[in-house]
Image (cartoon, helix red, strand yellow):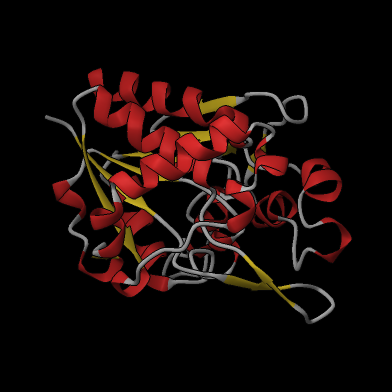
Length: 233
């Protein structure tokens, strides 16, 4: 059985550009879709967070007005309730042994911009995974975690790699807007990543070797399918 580490933000608030706090966390659709599809494929999933803190779902991601469908919002909430014990007792990132896993999956929400992007333990885990050829699959805002991957010589561990990520256009038009503390796509590009952009709000997945990435929530299912396919290789 393949084993996947699902690396999830533990942040519940993000400080906006104007200094105000805004509730955040992981995005329900992304975590639920990836977790469900992996489990349905017979993959063992282990949830991990910084310091083993219980992750918080972004309240907006369960709002029918945001999700676009009350039935879907309720479905996500039911699934999260069904895995509540896993979510309540995640593995601490600092205790991860990358040799125990075949892939690392990183769902988004704005939370990763708060903690995963700056956590040296997250960076060390991602670098170890990349060096070992382990599949790494961040999507939407999950690629913010890649920003933590700085090598001892100061170089960016994913420089020159092609990444799909929540675009500046999507952030400004349907994310935090002009009040976002930073733009993930721009930040990755400035560090040396190659950003591959699809049409806004449509599924777009890119594979660069062991790095599989998706652009937005609409990419959740396709990212999971690409991870499952990579694990079968």
